[in-house]
View 1 (spheres, rainbow, N blue to C red):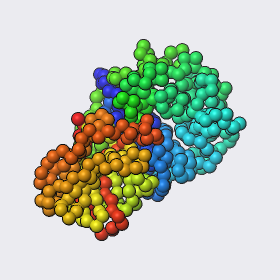
View 2: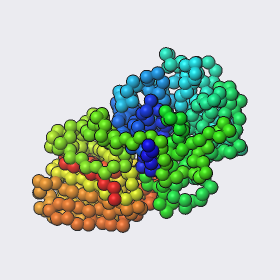
View 3: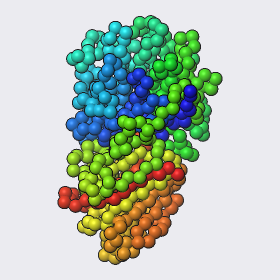
View 4: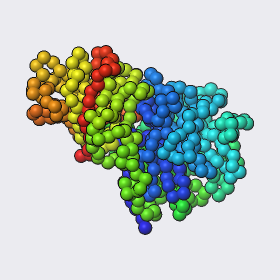
Length: 531
C-alpha cells in the first residue's frame, strides 16, 4: 500500500529540518530563531500527514532570547533516537552556543540544555556508531584563518553522553565538495555498508544552496568526494523556477529499507519569499555506494510516492485537539472555550508568564509598551503563515481601548518589516489604522473612523487580514462591515527584501503607551483559513 506526499510536506516557516525514525514513527524538528517556544516537534507515521506534538524548548529558563534579532536565537537543530532516548542538539547563537537536550517522550518534557564546552561554530548533529560511542559533528571557521567569508570546516569529536562533554581530540575532516566553497554547513553523519557518510549543505542558504556528500572507511577520514556533487540543488534552474534555495538535507530509512531525505526550499512569488524556508521531501536510492536523489529527475518533485500505509493523525487516540496541530490546515480558535494554547502558537523572545491568560471570557493579552519594532517581547501571539493565499481574523472587545492602548492584528516578517492593523478609541468612536512598517519606518496606509455603535457593541470588533500572493487587504466587521483597504504591497515582507532566515507570522497584537498589568485586550476568537 502506498501513499503520496505533496511538497512541501510542512508548508510555511519550517526551516532547517532534521528527522529521525523510531520504529514506525518519524519525528522532525525545525529552527525557530527568536520565536518562543523553540524547536517544534512534528510526528508522522506515513511521511504524508504530520502533527505538531510539542516544542522541545518550551520553558522560559530553557531558552534565553533577550534582545535577540529575529534571525538570531536558535539555528539548525538535529534530532536523533538511540536506545529509548531522543537527543537534540542545537545552537543558540545569541546565548551559550551549542547545547544538547534529551527526552524519553518526543512530545516532552525535554531536559534543560547542557552547553557543550569547546563546541564552537554552528549546525551540530549527533551520530551513534555501532560500538555505542556517540560523536558530535558540526561546522566552524577554518582553523588556519578564513580566506573569505564562509571559509568553514566540518569537524568531529567524540561526545561522552554520561558526562555530556566532548572528549578526545577534535578533527577537522572536510571543508566542502567544490573548490573555494562557501558555507559548508548543516552536516549529518551516517554509516552504511562499511562507509561513513557526511551529508552537508554548501553555497549558503539562498540561491546557490546545495546538498553534497562525501564518504570514508574511517570515521575521521580521509573523506573522498562524490564526483556527482552536488547531489541535489536548484541553483542551475534560474531565478524564475518555482522552488529555490534547496539544501540542508537529512537522510533516514524506513523499516522497509527505503531511503528518503528532508530538506529546506522556498516557493517565491515574482522573486519574493514571504513564507520563509519550508520542509520538502525526496526519495533516495543508493547506486555504487552513493545516494542519488529522485533518480531520473534530479530535482524536487511536487509529489513523492511512499511505500507506507496511510495514517490520519486526527484519528489517532493520542491526538489532543487542545494541543496538537496539523500543519497547513485551516483552523478557528474560540478562546472562550479554551484553557490552553496549542503548540503551534508562537511569541517573540521571552514573553514572561504575564503575557496572557485564558479565563473563559477569552484570551486576555496584556497591554505592553513594547512595540513590534523593538528587539524585545511585545504582546504578540501568532501562528506561521503557511499559504500564499490565506485569510486571518480576530474578534476582540473594545474595552480598555483608551489612554493610548491599541489592539488588533499583525503580519510580521521581522521587527523592521511588518503590517499592523490597530484599533483604538477616540472621541468620535473606534478608529482603525493600517500601518505598514518597512525598514523600521511606519507608513499609515489607511485610517478610518468606525461607527460609534461599533465602539459600544458587546459583540466585539472584528478585523480580517486577507493575503493574496504579494498583496494584502483589510476588512472590518463591527456594527457595519466593509473593506478598510486593499492592494497593500507586501513584497518587502520577504526574505529577499528584509533579509534573515524567518518566514512571516500572523496573529494578535496589543500595545500601549505604558505597561498596564490591570488591563488587557480581550480576544474572543482567532482564525487562519487557507484560500
